[in-house]
Length: 131
Image 1 (cartoon, rainbow, N blue to C red):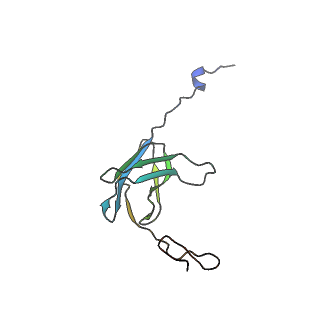
Image 2: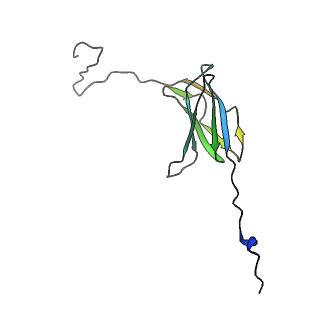
Image 3: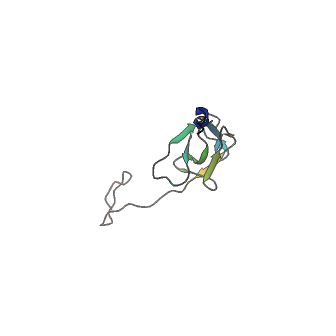
């Protein structure tokens, strides 16, 4: 009976090289400084995936590093603004640097109206009387 060499049964632990994604954020064609860009694994997963993020510099540029290979949803976190176009998904390969993944933001919608109670009365800081 032949006995295999122990090296035959050992597996080498291959280390995965993480990648990065970078780009530019603009609002009405002007660089947007201080915007947070968030990256989260795409697809359904009952467990929340780790969140990777970066903040744009004074020129509106961002870079998210040390991201494992995979498919991710990416978006600026910008109350009052929305992404112009479709939601963004980025696929990062092993050791890949995805560049020029840019965002153009536009002002989002707003809600206007009057808040009333059951008797149609309202009070607000700008009103001096109860109507």
